[in-house]
Every structure is written in C-alpha cells, then in structure tokens.
Length: 500
Image 1 (cartoon, rainbow, N blue to C red):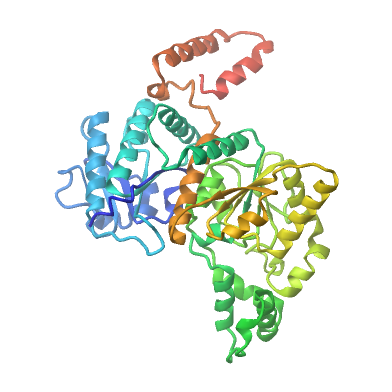
Image 2: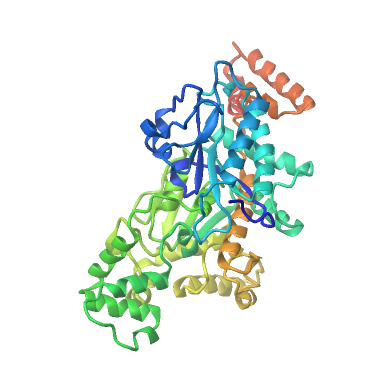
C-alpha cells in the first residue's frame, strides 16, 4: 500500500524521545543476534515474541507480533559500512511504504520514526559525523520518493545540533530539504536567527495541543455537556461558549466540579505533537500558553534541558526557561479559566500574568502558534500594547502569527501588529502539516549548540578546509596544558566546542 506520489514526504529532525511521539511505524536498531537494548522496550513492544522470522537474513524485518515495528541490524560480526547501513535502511523504508500500516484520518501521510542508527551500541559512534550525513541525505530522498513523513529523533544535544547544521549546509548547496518557497524559507531563517539570539518568545494556543489529540474548546464544552444528568436546554447552543461553561458549572455543582471534569477529560496525555517538539527544539527561554496540559513541558524535558518553571506557581530560576500558563494548569484544578466569571475576573485576579505577556510583546518577537486570536483576554492585552505604542508614536511589529485557520479576514485585522505566515492547504490537516514543515525549518536555523564542532567523532561533516581549521583549534587546546589561569576563558571556549 504505497502513498500518493504526488504528496512528497518530509524529513523532520526532532530533539527528544521517540516514545513521546505519535507515529504509524517505527524502526528499532538491533544486531545480528537480535540483542535489543533495554531502553527500546517502550517502543519495540514484546521482545520475547518480536524477533522476525528467518532473522538475521535479511538483516531487517517487521516484528513477528504484527506490530508496526521494524528491526534493523546495525551490528553484525563486523561493523557495517556506511553503504551497507544505508542500503538496509532504504530496503526497510520501502517495506514499510508497501505495508498495510495505515495512517489516522487526521494526517496527510504516514509517519515513520527512527533514531540516528549505528552511533550507540552499533559501534559506529566514532564516525557519527559521516553516518549522520549519510542518513540525512538518504532519509530526505526516501521521504520524498516514498511519500512518508520521517521523524529522525535524538535526545543528544550535540547530535541534534550537528544534524541541523548539516541540513542547513545541504540546503545552501542546493539540496531541497524543505518544501517551502523562497519567502517562506526567508521567514524561517529570520525567526530561527531571532531564536538563536535569544530574542524569540513563544505563544502556544489550543491548536498545538489539538494536534496531539486533545479537544478544542468547542469539543471540551460538548464533552462537559454529556456529563450533565438531564437534557440541556434547546437554546443551550445559542449561548456564547463562556456562558455555556458558566451554565455547566452551575448544573454540575460549581466551578470546582467543572474544573475536575475538565482535568478528567483532558487526562495526562503522553504523546506530544510535532509542534511541541519543534518548538521545544528552538531553545526559547520564555513561553506563554492558554493550554492546561503539560505537553510542552514534557517536550522541553526530553531535550535534556531542565523542565520549564511554571508561572505563576514556581519561582523563576537562573538556569531554567519559564512557561506562563494564562488559563491554568492541569495539575492545579482551581486555576483553570473557562467560564464567563473566570474571564470577567481575569484582570483582577491575574493582572501580573497579563502584564508579563505584554512585556514580551514589547521586548521580544513573539511567535504565535495554534491560536485563533479570538480569546478576549489575549485580544485585550494585545490591544492595550498597541494603544500604548500608538500614543508613543512607535511603530513596530510585535510578533509572527502562524495561521492554519484559513480565515483571511483575521490577517487584515492584525496586519499592523503581527507578521502573518499563512499555511496553505485545502483541508486543516494540510495546513497543519505545512505549519509543521515551517517550524522544522525554523528549528534548524535556531540550533546554535556547537559542542560537536571540535569533536573528532563529527569529523565526517566537515569539508577539507574546515577540517584543517578544526585540527588547528584542537592543537591549540593541547597547547594550553600547563598554562596559567589567564587562559581559562580560552580553554573554556574550546571545551564548549568539543575540544578535549
């Protein structure tokens, strides 16, 4: 069962953990003896029954349980060569593309997740630069030709940053890594540069979490309505959503009971959306959300950075990014903002939180994702900033709005306050995928971690002239042995680039 060849797939590079993602098929590394590392258990399923028939010939195959798990041998009696590893990977992807694995209705193409093969227990870690370059080129080509969206996932900050550098380098040389036009790529580079310089803040709306399977506001109200014992009034649907929530609170026995029901409906979702991971990979220190869930926090933690401080309930720490939850947190029932009363009293009860969002609009460039700009509190806060700047006769764009709604009029309403990135597509799932590809490009240009640069294991990513300079830098590091403390800043800078 192959996908429509008119819809080319895309290679996403993600900083995180494979088990955190929702995918349709996964590739798990093993060896010719079918020894699977224990940390793959959450992904690989029942290993006692999973060994493919006739293993290890061929050295790849689907789990014998029928689960959409494909195993690939990355270590035989001898280490696999780059060419052999790539060949096995190509054959595995072709087998997945022709399999009976189906995609959910909300997706354009099937998703296949895999790690950076061979650089762990596979024994090719000393050549991770060359392996990474070969994998990126192969996966990009196979994604497009087979019509698969491929998720290359790594929790290692150096590997992630090196992969993004390689993609940027390949793009500069004419290899098309993003199906975006010139203007879209220019915007991705601009936003990535802002993130790299610490000038980009994030605003996450409900659309981000909806992609992870959480309900929209309307769906949430409908689910809450089912919990009311009797029939709802015939004109209930004529009420404003805030008044609908207020009505349900009164019927269910108060705001506390309503909030408990909200938490039960949302639950503790384990799988993050692609947008969560892509945004987390940008390394922004400040973020604001109207969502109750903890998926963005989970995505940040999976990058091996510290989980964000959650405002206003935790103290901001010097080493941690922070996330302001304007409308409450799933772990704090009483904090949830949903009813008319909650919104009317928002300013009186949460004015500092609103002021913090306004401070970001004044001092940072805010990337707005998954929002509709229909939230009364957010609109009021943004308009107050606009009014303040108009009185000061200061004209400035406060952020970039990534629009997946397809509503052109909204662009006109906010054209003087925000740059507008409209995601094209006939259906919402097409527009969401366009957004994901755009964020993937932004994340690539935001990656600045260069711990890999002087690490000889990544030598395979360097050109001849770059390699000469790196060798000189490594010699310089060696020459600092026994030097006085005056050279400590130099040693520290070289060490931060991977020199030993």
